[in-house]
Image 1 (cartoon, rainbow, N blue to C red):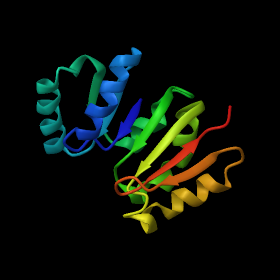
Image 2: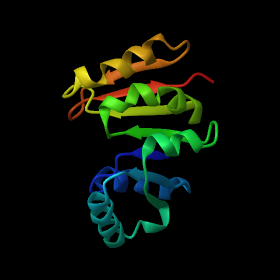
Image 3: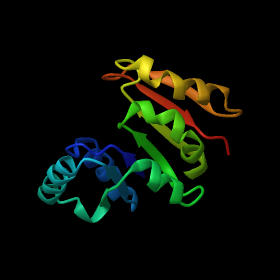
Image 4: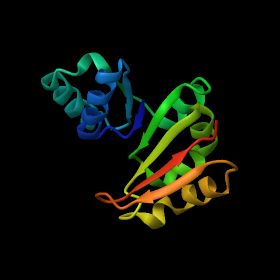
Length: 143
């Protein structure tokens, strides 16, 4: 799993719990050093550190270097204005059958709209918005 936008690590811990059950791991990217430090402390207290790789990194640069089809689940909760620009690399790193989850799809719909438009034009992608919390935009890459 790949999470872009760690913040304090709350979502990461939920992902890591699922990763541990399935023998996987979460790579989480955070650009802000203070947030990365806070998340690292939270991970240490959680007992889930072995399932989490926290990287203090620029997401765009990291994505550009990431291997093709290397991510099963990609969770976006970061700089919403950058999402559409990241789209070519997001699509490339997501494996066929992989799931993209975009957080705050209802609460920040205008900011998510450019990425959503790209997703809905992409052949074969199945998209849905789920009204849970602030909303989640879900997109499954075709096999």
